[in-house]
Image (cartoon, rainbow, N blue to C red; front, side):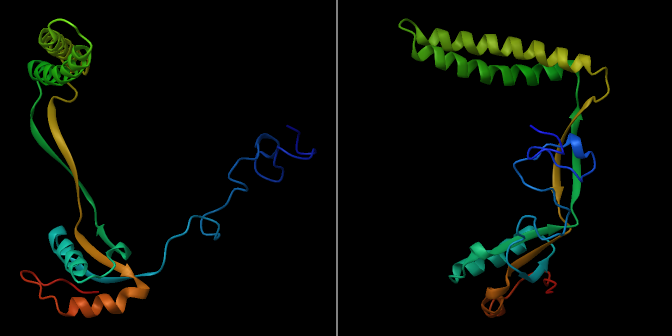
Length: 193
């Protein structure tokens, strides 16, 4: 490579000029300069719905009526992360969960070795399952003990949206509006944009 006074390889005129090699992406760009990835065709919001099944029902109705649904999207807005606490995690419970995971892995390894065994293949599978469960229990208990009690609970996380909008490419919006005019929504009325 040559320096900024040379021919190629380094970019001058940029912050850190002599230190920045030219990359495969070409010149660096700033957001909004028109050189970023395409945003797709313009779209129109057909309606906003309080829950996912209502938005899904609208898209399903469009699909049933031969609308090209590959030009449709369901967009969840006002996202919220919800972590539901399932229970207390103890070292014994961590060992039990680890034993279950290890048993599955041991079963897989046992099946793999069992395929190539000439003798008693069932014994190979059982031994793999038992050894996997033992090691899984040990690793689960040790991993939980090493946390020092900082996270003594189990939980499940999920994303939930406040509302769901059905959007369609602008070129097909009139066709979608005509079809959706025939759809009678039951339950809470959708807030049409």
